[in-house]
Image: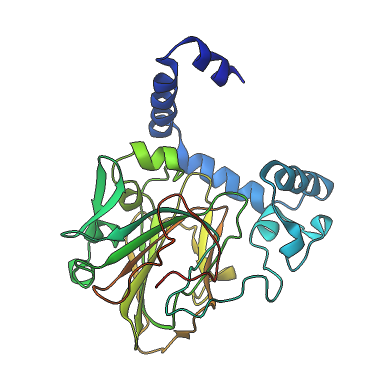
Length: 299
């Protein structure tokens, strides 16, 4: 309320408040806040957990009717609620070569121009930086396509395959934990290539190579992939502060279009890269468009 009252009395206030919000992200103890949030999200506190989940559902207008388990009181932790599966058939798959892999909104999508990915007005980052410095991998997507998809707190937070793919490798890249909301995307340079992230490289017999990059953020305690050999398939924590790489060519991990490939514990962003001339985005796809898992992503 104070924010809007200030806006009515000073044309400079909004700009100053925006700068303050970004400054706080630079100086806040993001790693500490995220670690604390992770512990709280795993905490099994009975009625207190139920009360918080109920508040969250009402605050963010979460649609529990489409959840496989719509009984808020049955979730023993916030993370169990946040990563809830959907009812079968809740997200029918379009008859399209590429489908949308998440619920959320399009932050940006378009062509990768000379290795550069558009983030927001005045901000770009390179495909090579995004994938953790692997020049050979980034070169596969030269002049290709990218899509940056933002998952808000109310959204379903499991991530699915846009097309059939065989897993080639996975790379954990340590980094910052800035918020990835639209405000941060507009004001933090190179946001998605500086935050902590997990780079998943796939090969499709029909569509060539593609990557799905799961980008962490403030309060995003963990990211998980269905194939990772760890408790609950969680990649982070731990946070070792160095790049980790796993190769899977000899294991033939094949995921079909629409299958779950990973999940966020408390929301973030997925950035995808595709090879040149493999497809064109659906005519309805544009920045800020709300999207749903299973809808057509390609023409």
